[in-house]
Length: 93
Image (cartoon, rainbow, N blue to C red; front, side, top):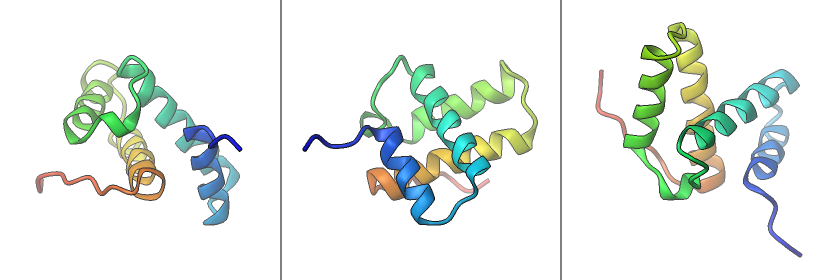
C-alpha cells in the first residue's frame, strides 16, 4: 500500500490528537501555502531558514497580523514535530 500524502498524514494526526475541524483546515492550508511559497519543495528538504523566510514574507509582503503569523508558524511546527518527526530550533527572541 502506498504511503499517504503529506497533507493527508497531517490531517490524520490532527484528528487523532482531537484538534478541531476548523484548526485542521487552517493548519493544512498554512502548510500548503508554505510548500507552494518554496516552489513545491518537500518540507523534509527544508529547515529553519525556509520557515523563517516564509514567516518574514507573511509579515513584510503580505502584512499579516502577528496572530496570523503565529498561527502559520504553529501549523508548520506541528508538521515538523508530528509528521516529519524533527524539531525546529529557532534562536530566542
